[in-house]
Length: 190
Image (cartoon, rainbow, N blue to C red; front, side, top):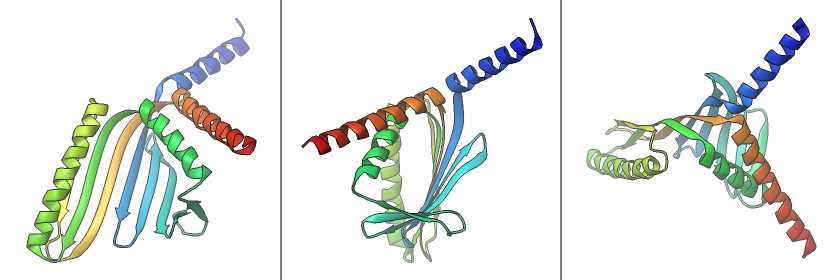
């Protein structure tokens, strides 16, 4: 065999492995409801590939990059959100969840009110984790709470580690695009 055939075989094998084997991804979401802002970052093999800052305003979400220079508006109604819902749902069905960490810092300025709020928040997070454990039984789930009794603070962060195959991701994209095209055809034919 010549070196060109060996090289071609190695490249083809590498391409098949990349498509079939799962890719380790990590998503970090941090929300500050008092400032009405969120930060979303996605890492692939510990390398940041996506980071957006979201501001929630009347009927839309404004996305900007880390420097705040490029701004894109997403309407909360319409085709873009429907496409993202379909793509997100089919992607979530295919992904293998590894770890989920919820970190929050809450304070209302009053110790009793803060303790009651944190108790209820822990209860709801535990219920969410039970639901998540039923859907994805191999996931590691943890809550880290930081209570600020004397301050008015409200921050919640979510860190998820998951893996998904590129083939599954491509299938979810095709499914979402096909439903979007089908909806467009129905809209234009009526």
